[in-house]
Each structure stands twice: as structure tokens, then as C-alpha cells.
Length: 140
Ligand SMILES: [Fe+2]
Image: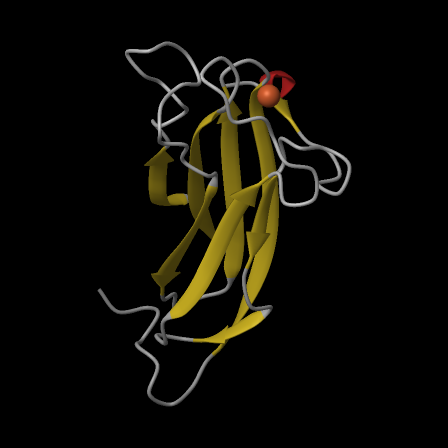
């Protein structure tokens, strides 16, 4: 998909931007947490008619051609009910933390999709501290 369709903006001013929270530096092979949220500064609407439908998190290892998908997170509860729109008891919030480990530096990319306003992308680099006990990056 062309970059023409993927929007970027300052997350402090734009409610659609995914925010990636992760340590600046991690140790190779040691689990750490990455949190992705949409609407961190300015909450995005969460109604049956207008909501964040899904977001993806990718990790692009430094020096490699392709990114790897960490996960795809579909948000399906937005007040739907047999009583009508916005009458239901469930509203999923666009925020999730995952635990993972890496063995080389790279950049996380988050892609969020609003059912009305399309795709939004952000990124965050992470450096990796190699230790003697770290798995061999060149093995496998
Ligand atoms: Fe929207």
C-alpha cells in the first residue's frame, strides 16, 4: 500500500496516531514490554459508528529487508447491542501491552485503522545491548 494512504502526525495533536512505549535499550534475549495505544493525549471516539477497529505492531530488525509482525489486534466491541448502536455494555479500548524479546536492534512500527479516517503509522527505535549470554545473532 502506498504511503499516500498511510498518515502520520504528532500524537500529541492527533487522536489517531498510535503511540509506542518501549525501553530505549533492552538486553538481547531478555523479555521486555511494548505498549501500543491510540488516542493517548486526545482520546479517539469509541462508538459503534466511529472507532479504532484494529492495530498492528511490527519489528523491523536493523539491516534486514523485511519487517516482522509482532501481532494484529482486532477490537470488536464498540457498544453494539440488539437495543441499537451504542447501547451495549462492551467498549474495547485501543491499548495493549505485549511482552517479547529481540536479539538485534531495530525499529517498531505501529499501524492503526480507524473505520472512518483510515490508516495511521508511528515508529520507535530500540537498541539492543548484547551480552555474553545473548543468543548468537548469526546462528539458525
Ligand atoms: Fe477516527
